[in-house]
Length: 455
Image (cartoon, rainbow, N blue to C red; front, side, top):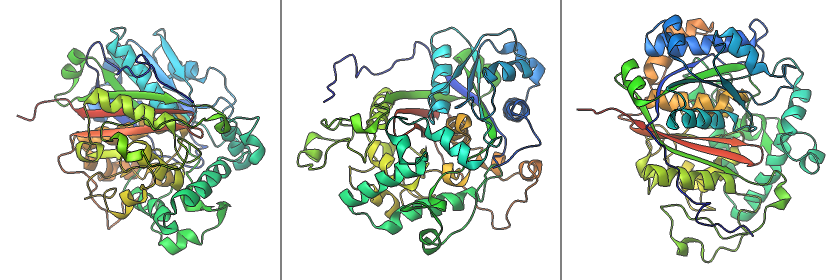
């Protein structure tokens, strides 16, 4: 059983404030043969610099003093040290840089590395750039590469397919907590629907619950609309210290909470332990709990990351104190598990977060308005950065600017739907993104907050 010492639960502190000042995306596709990864990364960064900051790439380059790159797997593009190639193409040589790899959480971990670089005083302006080249191999081979981020001595024997790993979790979750099967499909229904209003999305669509249930099965009981997309695309954000941030914009967004957690790569090695309580929970909540924790239905890494981020940001009730949320909805079941791991509902009651309407636009905590991984993308190295880009635009009140403008739809050869919906959350001040790897081996939680006075 894992037990914590005081040092393990130390709440993170930044030595100086860190701000996010810009974000940029490409669109995300199953195949992108007409553009190399270098071009996609350049396009996402140019959008952040030119559209977000309103300055020239030449002037921006003169301000940068460190770079962080985010790519999940060298296998797809068959290029070791791919970050060096991107760094050179973007014109940042001879500046120092690092490339981060923590599975599906690579994007969130890369942003965390950028935050550390600013907070420590090592750098004052850091672009964090993520991408994935997933179309140079066939889907079967791609799934095998991704699946090797789980334990090859154990999970891989289940078929080299992450959907199979999560299908087992889904079966166990349904056995332990007995949610309505339809509730899980509503997660996919919601996220595919919201993806319709994003020019960046790969799998937008309107489905009925019945259509999702009757869709082709990937791994029983998960159907195709309940599984994330394999994507090609890039995302970039720009982090800055306080002086630089306010020199670049009057509306920087502050990084107020960060958390990072991990757990055994081999899920069978996860031992029973007392539930780690979040700030909004009391010991009596789980005193009669019969199911083992974290077991096969919960993610200790997610709870640990949320614990640190909430305490750092002084959040005592996430549903009340967050205005917008992006979760790592790789599968419908992983989403409902995450609702519980990050304290939106007690364990076993995650279905209520969907059924109550809280997760929808107009609800108490709108979640995955971007379309998430199910509807918009999972270009793995870009994913956590994509999530924070969406949170950033919501907090700045710029969701419409970067989603409703016809120029972004036209840029990617798309047409904005006639029934376009405005998904800007009214007066959004604070949001969180969860970046998740494997079957919960690594998770980051990053909380952003309006960093300027509204007076």
